[in-house]
Image 1 (tube, rainbow, N blue to C red):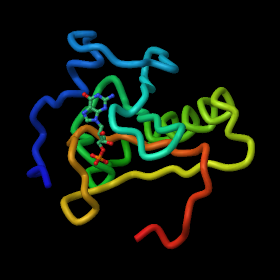
Image 2: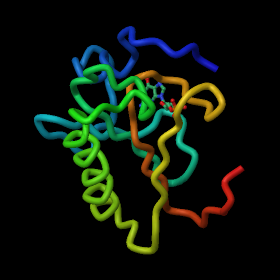
Image 3: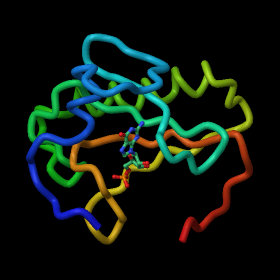
Image 4: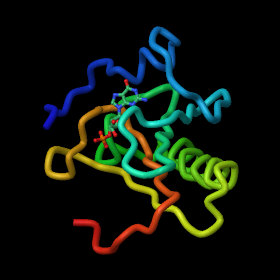
Length: 120
Ligand code: 5GP
């Protein structure tokens, strides 16, 4: 597992268009793009364009409430765009025990197949 850090990540390079990504939604605050290693037919990552210390959800402060809402709302918009009417899953991995590997907060939007609960 990656060591938690506030250093720039690969996602900054995607935001800055230094490396390509399959972008499915973008506005001034958030970017949504397909995961390079999809765990389901639809697997999209939704991230803030400005990290502002949000390496993960555990670092959230009151000032982050608006962007956190925008990330979740974008997940809903993209789920509809992707045709996930029958259901989808939202995941935020936080920290080593949750297998977080990129320390720039991101919402996983996963769907297109039956998913199980509990997730394991
Ligand atoms: P985490 O494990 O931190 O919750 O999720 C990080 C996700 O980022 C993983 O699902 C991984 O496949 C994805 N990822 C890592 N590097 C890249 C990349 O360069 N491009 C894209 N599109 N996804 C990436």
